[in-house]
Length: 100
Image 1 (cartoon, one colour):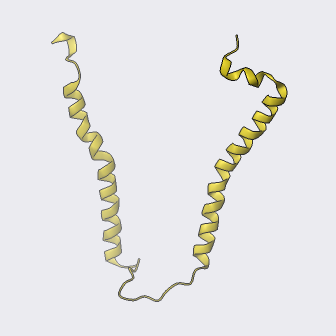
Image 2: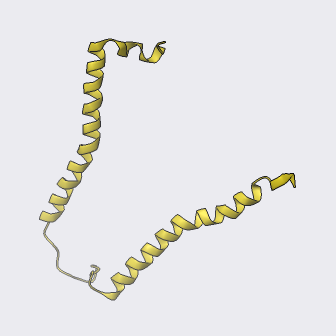
Image 3: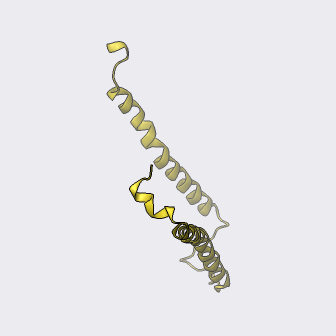
């Protein structure tokens, strides 16, 4: 039994072209972002660094450490607390066990 959506794939020539095109699209969608990230990292690595001033945040200070720790804690809370808050709500809305 043939499904109507896949009838054209019975032809060996069409199937071969289909395999080639899907393989190429998977390779492009997999490796093109990787190549773009490597190119961006290369351009950022070649960029001249600016001297430290009043507007720069140095990464070897306690302030940077606290800002980084606070960001990690806030992102962690934003990821965890919605699930923790929805647990009791889902339990309240669930049907009572044993028909009670």
